[in-house]
Length: 340
Image (cartoon, rainbow, N blue to C red; front, side, top):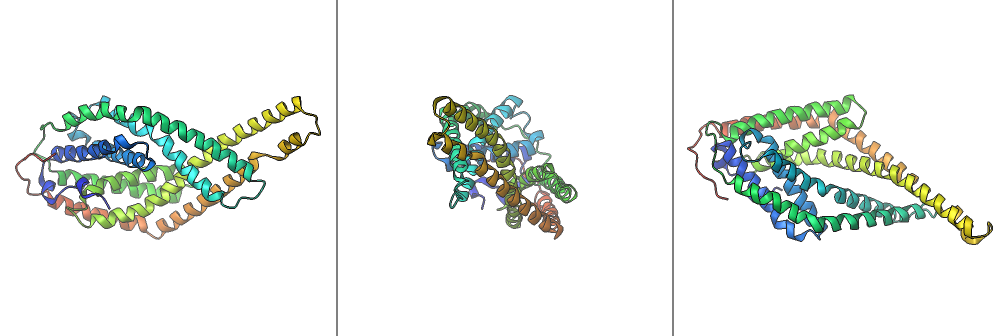
C-alpha cells in the first residue's frame, strides 16, 4: 500500500497540475532525505532508491508543467543519484538467489558457489563503501536547490491535475497494452524489459491516486502482480550476464593457479592434483542452467497470463479510471497554495 503522505487528496484533483506535481515531488524527495542518513542499512538504501525513482517518475510525467522548476542539470544529477544505487541492489539480489541455491549443493558444485559468493560479497562491500562515502552528499547537492525551486508558485491554472493525469493514464495504459502484446509476438528479451519499464511508469501514475480514486488501489495491486513477474525475469537476465563474466574470470583464475603450482610443486604433488580436480566453472554452469530454466518458466507463466487477458482487463479498468479522474477535475477551483 502506498503511504498516505505520498498520495493526493480529492481536493487536489481540481488544483493546477503544476502545483500538485510539485507537491508530489517534494514529498518523494523528503522521503528520500529522511533515509539519506541511514545508508548503512540495505533496506534504507532500497527505500531511498524507490523514493527517488518515484520523484523522477513524477518529473517525467508532468515535465511540461515543471519545465521552469526542474532544470536539465538537476534532472541529470537526480538520475545519477539513483543510478549509483543500482549495482548494489543487483548484487544483493544475486547473493540472495545464490544463498537459496547453496542450501544443498553437489560436492563438485561447491567450489563454484563459494568462489562466486566471495566475489559478490567483496563487490557488495566495495559498492556500499562508495555509497556511504558519497551518496548522501550527492543527494544533498541536488535536493537543496530542487526543494527551493519546487516551492515556487508559477502555475498555469488552465489545466487541473485530474485533467492532465487522465490523459497520462490513457497514454501509459495504451503503451503498456502495446508492450504486453509485443511479449506475445516476440520471444526476444527486449520486449520483456520494455514492458517492465512501461508497467512501472503506469504504476507510478496510479499510486498517488489511491485516496482520491479508491479503485486505483486494485489497479496498483494488479500491476504489481505482473511487475513482480517481469522484475524477477529481469533479475535473472542480469544474473545470467554476471555469470558469463564470472565464468571467464574463474577460468582465468584457475589456470593461473595451476600454472603457479606447476612451477613450484612436483607434478604428483597432492596440492596440484586437488587444484586440477577443483573447477569453479562446474558450479557456475549448474547455476546458469538453473537460472535459464527458471526464466523460461516465468516467461511462459507471464505469457499464459497475458493470453488469458490479464493485461487487457487491467488496461480496460485503467481507462475507466481515467474517465473518473477527468470528471474529478471538471470544476476547477481557484488556485490556492498547498502545504509543504
